[in-house]
Image (cartoon, rainbow, N blue to C red; front, side, top):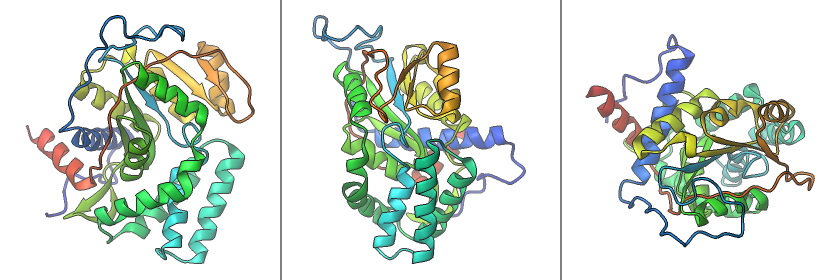
Length: 315
């Protein structure tokens, strides 16, 4: 397949790149669900009364969106993935030291630094260039077991499960590669994942992204695109994040929650009256009663997403 000509030119505006990244993420997520049935509304009388009733329990138009890094998982998924690739000799010790420093910085800061995250993404793209998507997917499964499974926050996992138990869909929304995010979502029994889409041609990574990393405004664009495709009502949906960078997606839904929030998000959440939970210190916030949907995500490569978007734009 020839390289796609519509990929991000440098002069393209930040907004256009965010929309492109969001559309790519939503197209990849949709591709994983193409053969899966839509969830049905929960039968009357089947809802569990123990928790405070979430206003949209069992409503198929409602869903929950969870940030990944430091919200569902301690640390950054991309760094854990890099550690696993080093073990498999994808890069040398110097690169590992850089990954380790970035992870240490992330953990100490407790927030996303765009410059550090961009450096990590650039490193990852250069490492996977020329490798096949299916190869990285297989390795990603192993890396999840080795480095990621033990890093899942039990409290956030329980919130996601509460959504699932109430019959709603649950999506990860992250700047991590969509393949990695989809593996994590599937392992946790979630519906699927929206993540950064790396371009692939004939199943081989080119070392370029489709649009830009799924970060900040791009996450909101991805959720908008997915909501349109899945017939979701965002006013009925919930979103969870630790970072002020995710205020755009938190502001997009009717039920925003700050999880392990950085200082800026904590202040903003308090000003807006959003609910907070912090699993890092054992502090307990207001008890949250919530819902979501079952399902399992499979993987969609960058090429599939690119083809889907190019066809959509050609209509």
